[in-house]
Image 1 (cartoon, each protein chain N blue to C red):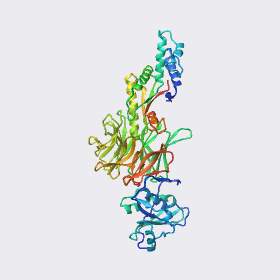
Image 2: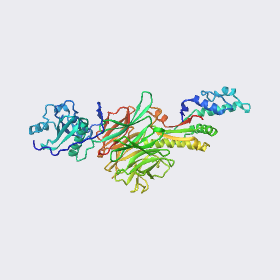
Image 3: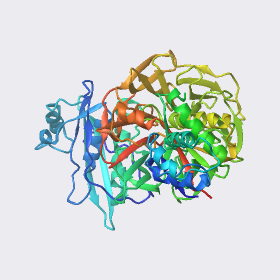
Image 4: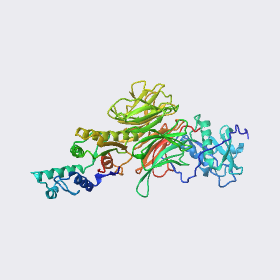
Length: 435
Length: 177
């Protein structure tokens, strides 16, 4: 063995509890020719009950659309530990990189997980880590490994060890609707329900520290905005103005919440200082102004307005006090319906719902040159949300009149469906990096 | 406050009108149509109205209009179409004559486009209906507005016909006090 494990990381994970659910069904609906072949060997273990971490890693890498894991059948009979002769055999797989690992029980439900990433061309180890984790956190270990591998091989920080929030609508047996606000891992596993209501729930928005969700709840028959702490489940009522209370969006420093109110008669964008609840009105106009999103630098808000006759996107500058600092300026010009803008966390792109000839697609605009491209040619696409590394988007779509969640790269490659959730799923929001 | 979805229940309307019309000209059941009102109206005719038959016809007509409690809209529009102006005038007249009666105007959209925009669009539709009622003399204290956007469709299939049924404002009468 040429190199020992380069660095050791010990995971002390205190996550919320979860139950493992079977039946994840990620459907890759569009193949990716440029994906790089990689071999992820099943991790060596004598424990037959332990989670198949290698499968979690392989699925993550495949979903990223940057990698094409070699099928398990091709790995059978191959060595799963590095040596010069093993490296020669690995080369016959046509891969550039190989991941091998092991899982050892340490008693008390605790495990030691090791993995190593090899460059098969150079015949050397790229990196390796060791983790101590309890069995319920093994899936998280898998996502951590995927994050490390992704960063090593692409130079871009991985976003697998993150969460998504979403809303589900279910029909109860008594014929009533039930709305559920839930969070899950970025691959759809470990669903945790954080709120149920017979009234609509809408527009979940992560706080920048990933510890809170703001959302709209129609409980009591009218829309109000709440902020819920995820660890404790405690929630505060943030806005219950007359009329609309909607579209909450956090500034990236967490100081402000942009929202939509119609207390002055029609839908306008406001900025609330969260600590004081002080409101600044941002838009002044008889048209609909809503769906604010903050640019990462905090100085600009993009929003939807139909002041030009149809919904289009506008940007307005915001000063340090959360007040309007410029006249709104239209930024979308292609298509007859552009709405629900969201900035990528790196500030380079704006994703949106892009309506053209009756199709509501998910599109991305490059802010540097205004160029716009379709990342998902959906008929009823909604609610795009960027991964914290800005490399992928999750959004809502419909299949056979049911809401589903899909993901795609910012270039529009590797479109896939997250098939774990049941019922009508909508309004996905990808979390920031977890603390 | 208990809401009654009167749009579905013409019978309720008959009760309401019956209760409120007191000594007036028509007694109806909810199934009566504009043409059917005549014979039923004749029975309850008051002596103070000379042209009883005409009066009962008007009331039947108004009742027919009042039984329409859903106003439909074009895509991404809050413009009230001509065909609904008479319906809203009938509701306005009824509400003006019954200041103790209240309505909730519930705005809805089809599922195309984005959800929060649709919430705002549903509100604007309800406001368009409210404006017409106010212009006809209804007191603003009788009207409440709520929008559900695309969250509560009435037609669930995925086609233009369903979309057109979902782009609506429902007029919900609160229980009469």
